[in-house]
Length: 178
Image (cartoon, rainbow, N blue to C red; front, side, top):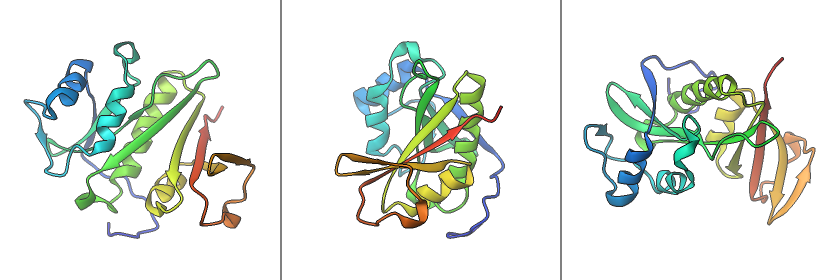
């Protein structure tokens, strides 16, 4: 599947692996994880930031590495466990060399299944206004744009077709179907 392809076809052979907290600590300590093959562009600085948010009690609600052919090529995960309303936020990253191939879309779909099984009722994600590829991933996975943040001011109930490109953050969500 090439870059810019409108259809999101699941990528076969992708596996999500929950990164145990001990390995998260090792990643933070020395940036390496023995026993795993990592793509040369992994991990990005965002993975370190996400690792800092994880607490040992989070269990499933941590970082899941995206593995293909026994090589870590990205990650997808939660910013913590669901809140008291069942809302959880996700983030994801695929190494730049492999973007545009449906990997992020497939990984996000897999993490949605983990979230629903774990009891989440609403899943949210944020994108920068300029990150059109990430916006397509969320759209393919059933998320809807529900809020825009303009320099710290939230604008609720936004029509996605009328979003000013100068806005900073787009907030997306997906509610579990009943």
